[in-house]
Image 1 (cartoon, one colour):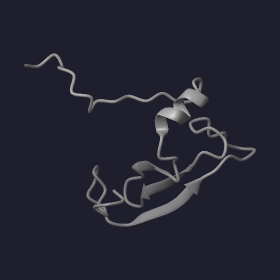
Image 2: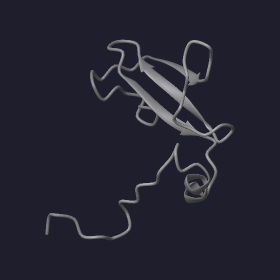
Image 3: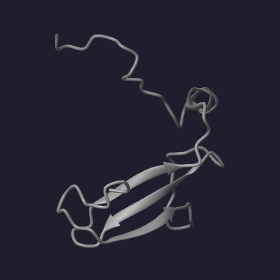
Image 4: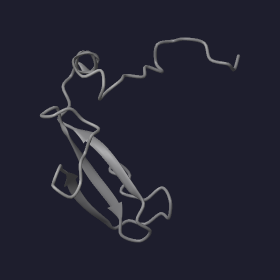
Length: 85
């Protein structure tokens, strides 16, 4: 949505954009403290919501090693063969 400026669900083109933060009402357990934030895009027409990670360190493997309970890296670009040949 952020790149195309179009909702993939309803093709809407008007959005509310904000930053997802921890608060007393909402815990954001998906990123370790001080390791980035999320930009949230919400379609004004249908409510479809997309999260985009911001300000992440370049070495996400190192971040995953430092926070193994909060983050894991899935590398689908490693060239391994899948079930389809």
